[in-house]
Length: 301
Image (cartoon, rainbow, N blue to C red; front, side):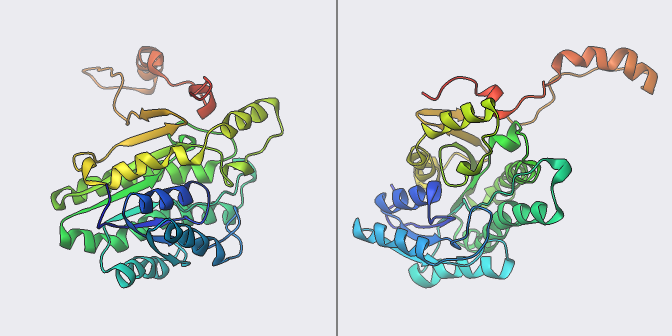
């Protein structure tokens, strides 16, 4: 499906990103495997993981090259995109997958923990996408796939930084889809459910947390890759601005924010009439304080 295309995958040294890169290569794409080689918390660096995936793609008969620059820096992000051009002469798709975790309850979260996660997930997605944009625009083609999360779309405990970044990515993707549509450039999101190194850092201190992690362990990262391959292929040329989810063998299309109820008062509202009339009328449409595991309460299929 991807013969002749050049695909950049960030955070591709392991987990979901590795499976994306391998699947892109198997589908015929030339793959730039980007990974800084850090810990789950974003510490350190190691060129080994990216090169190992490159070797796997080549061993399977594919074409790939490695990049070890950080997505969290604007200059470095431009080097990542330039590497795809230097190695392969063009770029056709960007998969923004790189990520770190610094989980902590909001009231204890440090400024550094907040910034580090925002920088990699949200700023990193913008930087790499923006660096590729002039090339997509001039060739009037291209596809973005961004990784969001139900932590942002729905909610989770102890992940204010990650949740904010992932919900921000959904908004970023929609804006890219709108701004780039006239140049035939598409942008979509995937919310993945799978057991990976990053998910493996989720706390397991309570029975509820342990049960959630045990469910996640049954979900393979490779199950996410077919959707990513489809979304960057020409078969998905009419698909843009959407949010998909993958959980084992289940595919989901997520809703996007729209008004669910309304009330009107010809003379306008006061705090008192809002309390007495508006909120009681709107209350049946209120969303409960649910987490991802409350909404996806059934076992993976």
